[in-house]
Image (cartoon, rainbow, N blue to C red):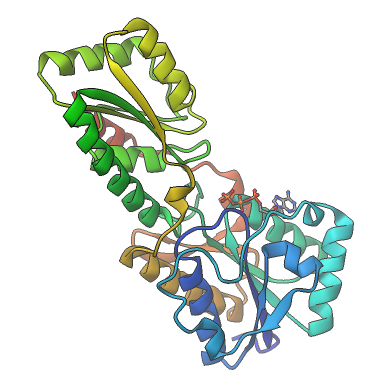
Length: 327
Ligand code: ATP
């Protein structure tokens, strides 16, 4: 145990994800369990720079586990990208006496924590908090499961109208440069095709798929498109298909920020809780500059440098399964 750590700060940064509150709660509770003072830093790195930092007590975390979003709020801080901004942040947390940080966010937020550790020696443990599931060093990120569930619920509703009118829907899901939500939501909603950034699907192939489904007398067609996909967004692809198949009644729906909101699923609450406690224990055992994740159901600490640089690949097996199911 590292007895030099007495006060820790916790923050959420970057895009919000359901389960962030559960993660904060776990960090605060674990901190109290190990007799630490815990400080909530509001609006991510912005709050470190603006000194928006408050001491947490058990009331601060009452009834947050089940709530979506993040009660500490999140932000993207341009100032923290500058050396002067980070120095201001350091001076503020030093004045309070914060010895270590738990940073909950995506790869950008973890990059900030890594730099801060290198420059000022403030130990940090990162938690993968992003709906995109695009972080190396963990099988799943906090918020991904809830986002997939939300997407599937929305797609189910769209399918009702697609079936009633023999329509072809292109539904765009989130996943900046990563097809994880698209693949999972696509498999879980019986999509006719799934278009992801990692793999380009030529329009001809998509047309062939649609025609073979027409022959098979499928009642509705839902194509899932990940935003930022190599073949373009849902609207772009729909336009291309409309030109070639003018007889199809084509509609586009962009699920957008809907996918970020809502109460975290049971899975995300549990994952966030496990990771939050492990982050505090990691800090107390001298595990600095690492991200805590779960691989094969075991807690694993990965150097932040690796987590942000190494690519997490989409599962080829899942893609193969999706193909079998959609033809
Ligand atoms: P999401 O995956 O949801 O977008 P993220 O954590 O990747 O989350 P970013 O906007 O990339 O989101 O990063 C969040 C914040 O982390 C930035 O606004 C900035 O304050 C800090 N950050 C990101 N990259 C750096 C960097 N290279 N140097 C310093 N700080 C950074």
